[in-house]
Image 1 (tube, rainbow, N blue to C red):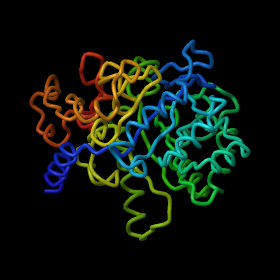
Image 2 (image 1 turned 90 degrees about the vertical axis):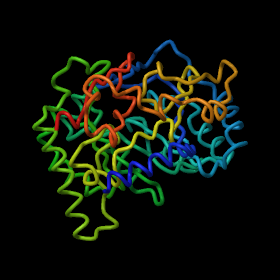
Image 3 (image 1 turned 45 degrees about the vertical axis):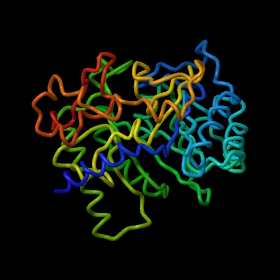
Length: 353
Protein backbone atom coordinates (compact mmCIF):
# COMPACT_ATOMS: atom_id res chain seq x y z
CA UNK A 1 0.00 0.00 0.00
CA UNK A 2 2.84 2.38 0.85
CA UNK A 3 4.56 1.63 -2.45
CA UNK A 4 1.33 2.30 -4.33
CA UNK A 5 0.91 5.62 -2.56
CA UNK A 6 4.48 6.53 -3.44
CA UNK A 7 3.91 5.48 -7.07
CA UNK A 8 1.02 7.92 -7.44
CA UNK A 9 2.88 10.68 -5.60
CA UNK A 10 5.81 10.30 -7.98
CA UNK A 11 3.46 10.46 -10.98
CA UNK A 12 2.13 13.75 -9.64
CA UNK A 13 5.65 15.13 -9.17
CA UNK A 14 6.62 14.06 -12.69
CA UNK A 15 3.65 15.94 -14.14
CA UNK A 16 4.57 19.05 -12.16
CA UNK A 17 8.38 18.70 -12.57
CA UNK A 18 9.00 21.81 -10.51
CA UNK A 19 12.72 22.59 -10.25
CA UNK A 20 13.94 22.75 -6.64
CA UNK A 21 17.65 21.86 -6.86
CA UNK A 22 20.13 23.02 -9.48
CA UNK A 23 23.66 21.61 -9.71
CA UNK A 24 26.47 23.63 -11.30
CA UNK A 25 29.64 21.81 -12.35
CA UNK A 26 31.69 24.97 -11.95
CA UNK A 27 35.02 23.19 -12.51
CA UNK A 28 36.39 19.76 -13.37
CA UNK A 29 39.71 20.47 -11.70
CA UNK A 30 40.44 18.63 -8.46
CA UNK A 31 43.29 18.54 -5.95
CA UNK A 32 42.90 14.79 -5.43
CA UNK A 33 42.96 11.65 -7.59
CA UNK A 34 40.52 9.37 -5.79
CA UNK A 35 40.34 5.69 -6.62
CA UNK A 36 36.56 5.81 -6.94
CA UNK A 37 36.33 8.93 -9.10
CA UNK A 38 33.73 8.60 -11.83
CA UNK A 39 34.85 11.70 -13.73
CA UNK A 40 38.65 11.27 -13.74
CA UNK A 41 39.15 14.87 -12.60
CA UNK A 42 42.70 16.20 -12.36
CA UNK A 43 44.48 19.25 -10.99
CA UNK A 44 45.23 20.45 -14.52
CA UNK A 45 42.56 19.10 -16.84
CA UNK A 46 42.92 21.30 -19.89
CA UNK A 47 39.30 22.37 -19.45
CA UNK A 48 38.68 25.91 -18.26
CA UNK A 49 36.27 26.61 -15.41
CA UNK A 50 32.88 27.81 -16.57
CA UNK A 51 32.90 31.62 -16.38
CA UNK A 52 30.71 32.87 -13.55
CA UNK A 53 29.00 35.32 -15.90
CA UNK A 54 27.77 32.48 -18.12
CA UNK A 55 26.12 30.73 -15.20
CA UNK A 56 24.59 33.94 -13.86
CA UNK A 57 23.12 34.67 -17.29
CA UNK A 58 21.51 31.24 -17.21
CA UNK A 59 20.14 31.91 -13.72
CA UNK A 60 18.64 35.18 -14.94
CA UNK A 61 16.47 33.15 -17.29
CA UNK A 62 15.57 30.67 -14.57
CA UNK A 63 14.32 33.37 -12.21
CA UNK A 64 11.91 34.66 -14.85
CA UNK A 65 9.89 31.46 -14.48
CA UNK A 66 10.43 30.42 -10.86
CA UNK A 67 11.10 32.13 -7.58
CA UNK A 68 14.86 32.00 -6.86
CA UNK A 69 14.17 31.30 -3.18
CA UNK A 70 12.55 27.99 -4.19
CA UNK A 71 15.63 26.70 -6.03
CA UNK A 72 18.72 25.59 -4.09
CA UNK A 73 21.93 25.94 -6.14
CA UNK A 74 24.73 23.46 -5.46
CA UNK A 75 28.30 24.34 -6.49
CA UNK A 76 29.99 21.09 -7.44
CA UNK A 77 32.93 19.79 -9.46
CA UNK A 78 35.57 18.47 -9.61
CA UNK A 79 36.51 20.29 -6.46
CA UNK A 80 34.69 23.65 -6.45
CA UNK A 81 37.15 25.14 -3.94
CA UNK A 82 39.81 24.98 -6.68
CA UNK A 83 38.18 28.06 -8.17
CA UNK A 84 39.94 31.24 -6.96
CA UNK A 85 36.64 33.12 -7.31
CA UNK A 86 34.52 30.61 -5.38
CA UNK A 87 33.49 33.17 -2.74
CA UNK A 88 32.44 35.62 -5.43
CA UNK A 89 30.48 32.83 -7.16
CA UNK A 90 28.49 32.17 -4.02
CA UNK A 91 27.96 35.85 -3.26
CA UNK A 92 26.64 36.67 -6.73
CA UNK A 93 24.31 33.65 -6.74
CA UNK A 94 23.00 34.64 -3.33
CA UNK A 95 22.50 38.24 -4.40
CA UNK A 96 20.15 36.98 -7.11
CA UNK A 97 18.02 35.39 -4.39
CA UNK A 98 19.11 31.75 -4.76
CA UNK A 99 20.10 29.86 -1.61
CA UNK A 100 23.29 27.89 -2.24
CA UNK A 101 25.65 25.24 -0.92
CA UNK A 102 28.84 23.38 -1.82
CA UNK A 103 29.91 19.76 -2.28
CA UNK A 104 33.60 19.31 -1.43
CA UNK A 105 36.28 16.86 -0.32
CA UNK A 106 37.05 19.38 2.42
CA UNK A 107 40.82 19.43 2.12
CA UNK A 108 40.88 23.05 0.91
CA UNK A 109 38.23 24.30 3.31
CA UNK A 110 40.29 26.34 5.76
CA UNK A 111 38.69 28.22 8.63
CA UNK A 112 39.39 31.51 6.84
CA UNK A 113 37.78 30.36 3.59
CA UNK A 114 34.81 28.94 5.46
CA UNK A 115 34.26 32.30 7.17
CA UNK A 116 34.31 34.06 3.80
CA UNK A 117 31.89 31.56 2.28
CA UNK A 118 29.54 31.97 5.23
CA UNK A 119 29.68 35.74 4.86
CA UNK A 120 28.80 35.25 1.18
CA UNK A 121 25.67 33.30 2.16
CA UNK A 122 26.71 29.63 2.29
CA UNK A 123 23.75 27.62 3.62
CA UNK A 124 25.00 24.03 3.50
CA UNK A 125 28.12 21.99 2.89
CA UNK A 126 28.44 18.34 1.93
CA UNK A 127 31.84 16.91 2.82
CA UNK A 128 33.03 13.51 1.65
CA UNK A 129 34.59 11.43 4.40
CA UNK A 130 35.05 7.80 3.45
CA UNK A 131 35.72 5.96 6.68
CA UNK A 132 38.48 6.04 9.29
CA UNK A 133 41.84 7.63 8.55
CA UNK A 134 43.70 4.76 6.89
CA UNK A 135 40.80 3.78 4.63
CA UNK A 136 39.89 7.36 3.71
CA UNK A 137 43.50 8.14 2.80
CA UNK A 138 43.71 4.97 0.70
CA UNK A 139 40.55 5.79 -1.23
CA UNK A 140 41.62 9.40 -1.79
CA UNK A 141 45.21 8.49 -2.70
CA UNK A 142 46.64 10.91 -0.14
CA UNK A 143 48.45 10.34 3.18
CA UNK A 144 46.99 13.44 4.82
CA UNK A 145 43.55 13.72 3.23
CA UNK A 146 41.73 12.55 6.37
CA UNK A 147 43.45 15.06 8.64
CA UNK A 148 42.59 18.01 6.40
CA UNK A 149 39.02 16.85 5.80
CA UNK A 150 38.40 16.23 9.49
CA UNK A 151 39.73 19.68 10.35
CA UNK A 152 37.32 21.24 7.84
CA UNK A 153 34.44 19.13 9.11
CA UNK A 154 34.97 20.22 12.72
CA UNK A 155 35.10 23.86 11.64
CA UNK A 156 31.89 23.48 9.65
CA UNK A 157 30.10 21.81 12.57
CA UNK A 158 31.06 24.73 14.79
CA UNK A 159 29.19 27.16 12.50
CA UNK A 160 25.70 28.01 13.68
CA UNK A 161 22.85 27.57 11.19
CA UNK A 162 25.10 25.82 8.66
CA UNK A 163 23.72 22.46 7.53
CA UNK A 164 26.54 19.91 7.47
CA UNK A 165 26.26 16.58 5.68
CA UNK A 166 28.86 13.83 5.41
CA UNK A 167 28.73 11.40 2.52
CA UNK A 168 30.56 8.08 2.82
CA UNK A 169 31.18 5.72 -0.07
CA UNK A 170 31.16 2.17 1.33
CA UNK A 171 33.52 -0.36 -0.24
CA UNK A 172 35.37 -3.55 0.65
CA UNK A 173 38.08 -1.65 2.48
CA UNK A 174 35.97 0.41 4.89
CA UNK A 175 32.99 -1.92 5.28
CA UNK A 176 34.16 -3.52 8.54
CA UNK A 177 34.73 -0.12 10.17
CA UNK A 178 31.23 1.30 9.73
CA UNK A 179 30.12 0.90 13.35
CA UNK A 180 33.11 2.66 15.00
CA UNK A 181 33.05 5.27 12.23
CA UNK A 182 29.38 5.92 12.99
CA UNK A 183 30.25 6.47 16.66
CA UNK A 184 33.05 8.85 15.64
CA UNK A 185 30.70 10.90 13.46
CA UNK A 186 28.16 11.17 16.26
CA UNK A 187 30.68 13.04 18.38
CA UNK A 188 30.97 15.75 15.69
CA UNK A 189 27.28 16.67 15.80
CA UNK A 190 26.80 16.74 12.03
CA UNK A 191 23.27 17.01 10.67
CA UNK A 192 23.21 14.10 8.25
CA UNK A 193 25.26 11.04 7.29
CA UNK A 194 24.51 9.74 3.81
CA UNK A 195 25.84 6.32 2.88
CA UNK A 196 26.39 5.30 -0.73
CA UNK A 197 28.04 2.51 -2.69
CA UNK A 198 30.11 2.65 -5.87
CA UNK A 199 28.68 2.66 -9.39
CA UNK A 200 30.79 0.31 -11.56
CA UNK A 201 31.97 2.92 -14.06
CA UNK A 202 35.06 4.98 -14.74
CA UNK A 203 37.97 3.99 -12.49
CA UNK A 204 35.82 1.52 -10.54
CA UNK A 205 34.41 -0.50 -13.43
CA UNK A 206 36.68 -3.51 -12.88
CA UNK A 207 37.93 -2.87 -9.35
CA UNK A 208 36.59 -5.58 -7.03
CA UNK A 209 37.78 -3.75 -3.92
CA UNK A 210 35.18 -1.09 -4.63
CA UNK A 211 32.11 -3.30 -4.87
CA UNK A 212 30.22 -4.86 -1.97
CA UNK A 213 29.00 -8.41 -2.51
CA UNK A 214 25.33 -9.27 -2.07
CA UNK A 215 25.79 -10.43 1.52
CA UNK A 216 27.58 -7.21 2.49
CA UNK A 217 24.88 -5.16 0.78
CA UNK A 218 22.22 -6.86 2.92
CA UNK A 219 24.28 -6.22 6.04
CA UNK A 220 24.63 -2.57 5.04
CA UNK A 221 20.88 -2.21 4.61
CA UNK A 222 20.30 -3.79 8.02
CA UNK A 223 22.96 -1.58 9.60
CA UNK A 224 21.18 1.55 8.37
CA UNK A 225 17.76 0.16 9.30
CA UNK A 226 18.87 -0.61 12.87
CA UNK A 227 20.33 2.89 13.37
CA UNK A 228 17.17 4.56 12.09
CA UNK A 229 14.90 2.36 14.19
CA UNK A 230 16.88 3.10 17.35
CA UNK A 231 16.72 6.83 16.62
CA UNK A 232 12.96 6.62 16.01
CA UNK A 233 12.30 4.67 19.20
CA UNK A 234 14.34 7.18 21.18
CA UNK A 235 12.44 10.03 19.51
CA UNK A 236 15.80 11.63 18.70
CA UNK A 237 14.86 14.67 16.64
CA UNK A 238 18.14 16.52 17.17
CA UNK A 239 20.54 13.65 16.49
CA UNK A 240 22.47 12.84 13.32
CA UNK A 241 20.16 11.64 10.54
CA UNK A 242 21.43 8.51 8.80
CA UNK A 243 20.23 7.27 5.44
CA UNK A 244 21.08 5.46 2.24
CA UNK A 245 21.63 7.58 -0.84
CA UNK A 246 19.13 7.85 -3.70
CA UNK A 247 21.11 5.47 -5.88
CA UNK A 248 18.58 2.68 -6.30
CA UNK A 249 15.52 0.67 -5.29
CA UNK A 250 16.24 -1.71 -2.39
CA UNK A 251 13.15 -3.91 -2.20
CA UNK A 252 12.01 -4.84 1.30
CA UNK A 253 14.25 -2.13 2.78
CA UNK A 254 12.25 0.62 1.09
CA UNK A 255 10.80 2.93 3.72
CA UNK A 256 13.42 1.77 6.20
CA UNK A 257 16.80 3.08 5.01
CA UNK A 258 15.70 6.53 3.80
CA UNK A 259 13.32 9.21 4.95
CA UNK A 260 11.08 8.20 2.05
CA UNK A 261 10.96 5.66 -0.75
CA UNK A 262 13.36 5.44 -3.67
CA UNK A 263 12.87 8.03 -6.34
CA UNK A 264 15.27 9.40 -8.91
CA UNK A 265 14.53 13.13 -8.92
CA UNK A 266 16.82 13.88 -11.87
CA UNK A 267 14.74 15.76 -14.42
CA UNK A 268 11.81 15.92 -11.99
CA UNK A 269 12.98 18.29 -9.28
CA UNK A 270 16.75 18.20 -9.82
CA UNK A 271 18.53 19.70 -12.79
CA UNK A 272 22.10 20.54 -13.63
CA UNK A 273 24.48 22.16 -16.05
CA UNK A 274 27.95 20.73 -16.59
CA UNK A 275 31.24 22.37 -17.44
CA UNK A 276 30.49 22.20 -21.16
CA UNK A 277 27.12 23.92 -20.73
CA UNK A 278 25.10 20.74 -21.21
CA UNK A 279 21.70 20.72 -19.49
CA UNK A 280 20.70 17.54 -17.71
CA UNK A 281 19.71 16.03 -14.39
CA UNK A 282 22.17 15.50 -11.56
CA UNK A 283 25.87 15.55 -12.43
CA UNK A 284 26.30 11.81 -11.83
CA UNK A 285 24.41 11.11 -15.05
CA UNK A 286 26.42 10.71 -18.25
CA UNK A 287 26.47 13.48 -20.80
CA UNK A 288 24.75 11.15 -23.28
CA UNK A 289 21.51 12.08 -21.55
CA UNK A 290 21.95 15.85 -21.88
CA UNK A 291 18.87 17.68 -23.11
CA UNK A 292 20.36 20.90 -24.44
CA UNK A 293 23.28 23.28 -24.10
CA UNK A 294 23.40 26.87 -22.84
CA UNK A 295 26.26 27.56 -25.27
CA UNK A 296 24.10 26.53 -28.21
CA UNK A 297 21.35 29.03 -27.56
CA UNK A 298 19.20 26.87 -25.28
CA UNK A 299 17.46 28.50 -22.33
CA UNK A 300 17.61 26.26 -19.28
CA UNK A 301 13.93 26.61 -18.33
CA UNK A 302 12.73 26.11 -21.90
CA UNK A 303 14.62 22.83 -21.98
CA UNK A 304 13.39 21.94 -18.48
CA UNK A 305 9.75 22.51 -19.46
CA UNK A 306 9.75 20.86 -22.89
CA UNK A 307 12.42 18.12 -22.85
CA UNK A 308 13.60 15.48 -20.31
CA UNK A 309 11.35 12.73 -21.73
CA UNK A 310 14.02 10.09 -20.96
CA UNK A 311 14.05 11.24 -17.34
CA UNK A 312 10.30 11.42 -16.77
CA UNK A 313 9.07 8.35 -18.64
CA UNK A 314 11.18 5.27 -17.90
CA UNK A 315 9.29 2.79 -20.05
CA UNK A 316 12.28 2.62 -22.37
CA UNK A 317 14.22 1.09 -19.47
CA UNK A 318 12.11 -2.07 -19.42
CA UNK A 319 14.75 -4.23 -21.06
CA UNK A 320 17.27 -6.81 -19.83
CA UNK A 321 16.74 -7.79 -16.19
CA UNK A 322 13.98 -5.16 -15.96
CA UNK A 323 11.81 -6.78 -18.66
CA UNK A 324 9.76 -9.02 -16.39
CA UNK A 325 10.71 -7.63 -12.98
CA UNK A 326 7.72 -7.40 -10.62
CA UNK A 327 9.25 -4.37 -8.90
CA UNK A 328 9.52 -2.23 -12.05
CA UNK A 329 6.29 -0.34 -11.25
CA UNK A 330 7.93 1.06 -8.11
CA UNK A 331 11.59 1.02 -9.14
CA UNK A 332 10.95 2.52 -12.62
CA UNK A 333 14.21 1.00 -13.83
CA UNK A 334 16.37 2.81 -11.25
CA UNK A 335 18.12 6.14 -11.77
CA UNK A 336 19.79 7.23 -14.98
CA UNK A 337 23.20 7.32 -13.31
CA UNK A 338 23.03 3.49 -13.14
CA UNK A 339 22.60 3.29 -16.93
CA UNK A 340 25.58 3.10 -19.29
CA UNK A 341 25.95 5.07 -22.50
CA UNK A 342 23.68 2.59 -24.31
CA UNK A 343 20.99 2.66 -21.65
CA UNK A 344 21.84 -0.72 -20.14
CA UNK A 345 21.49 -1.17 -16.38
CA UNK A 346 24.94 -1.55 -14.83
CA UNK A 347 23.86 -2.36 -11.28
CA UNK A 348 20.61 -3.40 -9.60
CA UNK A 349 20.46 -3.41 -5.79
CA UNK A 350 17.05 -5.07 -5.78
CA UNK A 351 18.33 -7.97 -7.87
CA UNK A 352 21.42 -8.36 -5.66
CA UNK A 353 19.38 -8.21 -2.45
